[in-house]
Amino acid sequence: MARLLRTRWLMRLPIGLFRSGLGWVLGPRLLMIEHLGRRSGKPRYVVVEVLERGPGRFIVASGFGPGAQWYQNLRANYVAYLSTGLIRRAPAHPRFLEEQESRVVLEEYGAAHPRAYRILREAMGRLQDGYPHIPLVEFTPKAALGGLPLA
Image (cartoon, rainbow, N blue to C red; front, top):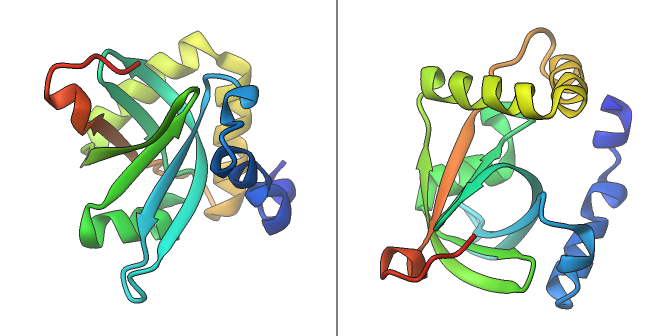
């Protein structure tokens, strides 16, 4: 699994579907984040799994840890647009969960999806040379901040 996650073309394949408006075919557990490169200022894209969703919020994991490019870009400039299901390019505010808060969310995710969580933990452990800290980011689409529930 870890080797598949390092296969760049394979990991970038869902981006084309999302950008063409077909992200909904991948189901509700995936989300595309458009962010800006911290040095280039150019749009960048990543598709990640949604660990938890609720009215007006999405929580995703940075499985490659705090060194993931998308995670570093968001930390640098807080610019994010989300695409999931029929929602396309919704401006969103990222909030970086503290390690303890992340642990609680991951435990709940593990209880709800034990097989997926085991695979995630094992793959991330290999990718991060040991037991990983998996940072989580909560996104609140700005439309939700204005009262429209997005889920």
